[in-house]
Length: 211
Image (cartoon, rainbow, N blue to C red; front, side):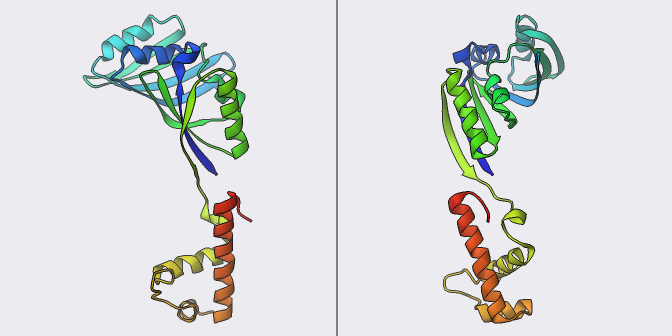
């Protein structure tokens, strides 16, 4: 499944939370959980800052915050939860039916958002960002695989055995014959298993799908 990391400017849509973060430019805002609802969002937020009291006071006096509760504060950190009906920065996620991976980091007005979804869903998210006039940049795009989906159990077994015995080392420390003997199967069977497993790995890497 594709995994993307995007940085976006929350202040571009008058995002009140992003604006607060610009007033505390040295602080790191960590959104630990967000529950989007029809009438807004419920958020658990951790902020690394020595100005916890000032930050909590700012939330309490922000019109877009419907309610706020401080759970913990010390000289370096404040943990709070709040409810808001102003969710412009979240709307692209809602409209594209995506859920971000947590924590989402916010620094000085910029969100770092990570998503794991299909190419189509990720494309829908970036389309929504464009439609909302939210500037963004893609920091990374990777493809992750679940070995249990990409290979059968027998293919996974022979591939891991081949790696452990040095079959893929240069020069090789293990031949197909030796690999077959270690698995108590015929050489031709080992060769076919390796070929099919390697074919799936290469095809999955190139196309992004397993066959």
